[in-house]
Length: 280
Image (cartoon, rainbow, N blue to C red; front, top):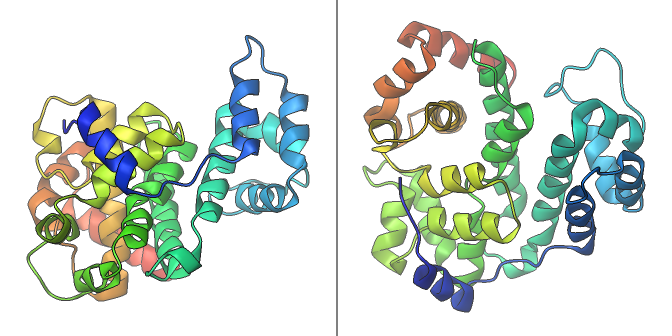
């Protein structure tokens, strides 16, 4: 497992913009810390932010949750998906909203659209497998695994050129190009962003390690390897649909991922075609 020590985090803190946690999220975290969190109080707090409430309801009524009937208010949402799920949804919404296009030299709308596609495919893969997984965790992991990229694009004025280079045929991954140019990479910065926003520790560690090609061979927990494998498979599916070729990580990890998820190459290609029908 990759690790980031305090001195590295201190350097990041001095040099990178990380949006501050909004008051709404801080309040929710305080309410969650109670011995017996009050569902009604939590729902009422979320409802005070109309934009966040609207996004939460839109998400919970999307195919990700596959509900048989629509949910029309936050109180019902909290009771249905639980405290962890609702806080995850609110966090997802607020982090996306906290990065401003005016500060950033990549197209954020396109970036978040791609991240949302990966998040949705993560959930679809999770639903198709026998292992029980958390939809909220898969969605958050898919959405925020690259959350260090906007922070990189705020700090480095030429970052858009580097970012666009990943769409060209190259043997180098984005983090290798980043290390070559900046001596830091978006996985480390993403870990810092996620940790600063108090995302669950296991998600933070997966964000840090999501380009580690040795992750599945190292002494990591089975469930972490499972989530990692789903993320990398979703990444490649979305990348392939967009660029008509595999990502740079995929060839080195493909067989280990198939083994971890207990699927075959044929199973993967069936899933790839199913995602094409969903226009992912």
